[in-house]
Image (cartoon, rainbow, N blue to C red; front, side, top):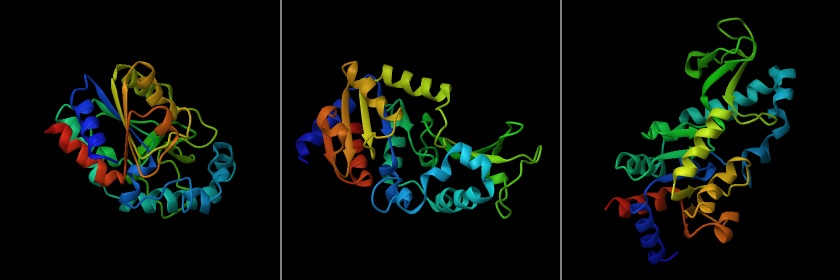
Length: 247
């Protein structure tokens, strides 16, 4: 990647009328969270079919220990890295209107971003599948699995999207509305293979917007959609871009 591309991308971000970020697993790898796809990813070690909603309802005793191990024990230790912090700084400087993330780790919020549309939900909450009440995950002990709903004793499910579940209308609308308003979209750490989330940058592009992509390797976006491809680690490239855009 040339410095030229970085400088041009930072100018586009600096001059944006409304800019958004679209993030995926790659932004959280440096926080110690493995991606789901690819070598060493979560789905290379665990069977994704066990995280299908119907399977979970039928076999909660089997699935809950896996949920605890993958999503609660591991994410509990993760902290925001310089990429999350740079996006929060861009927002506080008025250079970023919000983040749409496919991640369920809540690290954007922890880093200080206030407008975050968590497209696939988050581990921060659980919902009872019987009485539909929501609970803060920290208030639910996981020493006995599956955990029971404090209100009715029903089955609790983490409030993120399982296979076979649709995206909630409100978050989909909020994410697409932000994309329709944005003239710059900064993609960080995702190749956009997961649909419908992966279509969000195309909304910006199709309305004449500029796409800046930060990824370790080229993706489907790199050749067809991105105006600037900044190859490198999210925790290195995002702060460099942010510093120039805020200068």
